[in-house]
Image 1 (cartoon, rainbow, N blue to C red):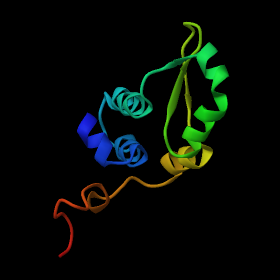
Image 2 (cartoon, one colour):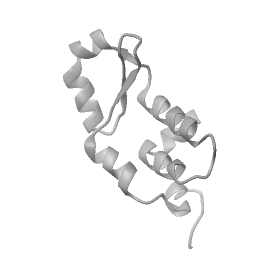
Image 3 (tube, rainbow, N blue to C red):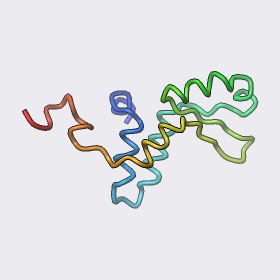
Image 4 (tube, helix red, strand yellow):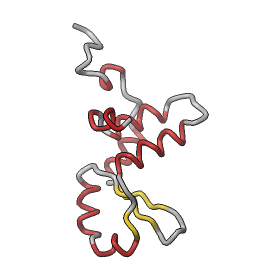
Length: 104
């Protein structure tokens, strides 16, 4: 999925997966989020660069912070979260605009 995710916006991919009827949907969404966010940053490192991580999130890039073995926190801009949760799933034309799908 690496090449696909570079071409597609992670928000569009998650919006499409959230409406998919699939028992592994949750795992698929997690995989997309982890791939888009990149490697987890340890909490100590995140505290040192919180401003940069927050700016990345505001720019649409997910960031993961590992919290001392207790779990992982995903930092995402509120606007991006609202888009993923509130907007309907994408159309095929939105997903594949440069692949000749849709009206001509």
